[in-house]
Image 1 (tube, rainbow over the protein chains, first blue to last red):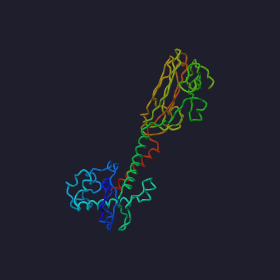
Image 2: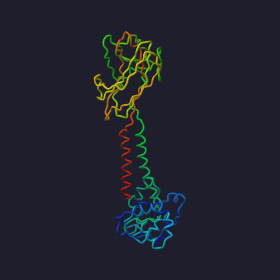
Image 3: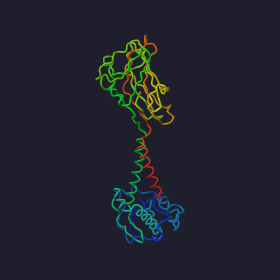
Length: 235
Length: 128
């Protein structure tokens, strides 16, 4: 029987028990567990016991400790660390729940996939038993899942942030009016006699451009301006 | 007329305009066509705004939204210079820094969002 299941083992398991787990694995446990005490980092990721119950052993689930005789008062403790101080039968129930959760994780991700995804190496204490992979320590795989989940959230956030920004569809500074037709600009001189001039490069002698070359201003066509200056040289 | 651009209700046109004046009125209209690449003057029936002055104005920044575009489409924006009486109006008008922006995500952004949402849904499904 596993006697050294660390607190973190359950605290980071949240939400991985399947109701339809392999029948032959129910109740199985690893023979030995590695000596792993919770680190400060592990404690920071501790999940409140209420939440842990809801996620790891949902109500009405066959995996819920209530099915094994754990009362509500026990489940209201602040963390599994406190729960681990319960009687041996309670611990056994919890361990069973934990182990099935770990197995579910291992089956889902597999060590190879986890490693290729940049996750930490598979946790120690895992091996085949009863037709499935069993782990007495699941920190690595849990971290992997958290990492992947964070990446997914990141994708959504990045996309949302990108989508909320204004996209420049067109930007034209008229540095060279002669390039406009090739860029897709079109001109129509619809003026009646006397016919006006078309748009032309700006004349810096009248006023300078706002930005770019001093004459990078486009000037009008249409209704025959009476004193429209002659087109200036481009520059 | 600008090149054909994708237009939607979030699109925004901004540009700078300046008139030389000298007592002659210069007037410019900004018109919208949602008829794709058409350059037919008749298609530019929607006037977004106008500006006119008969003095040296300095550069004036103007912006117009495209709230009239109900559904995303493509079209052009035209800058129409015109005066009614050339004996009393029409001198010199400059245009600069024309920019059109849109807040609608591009297809690549939709794809990115879809991947993230799908991943989250799969993650949630397998965790149940």
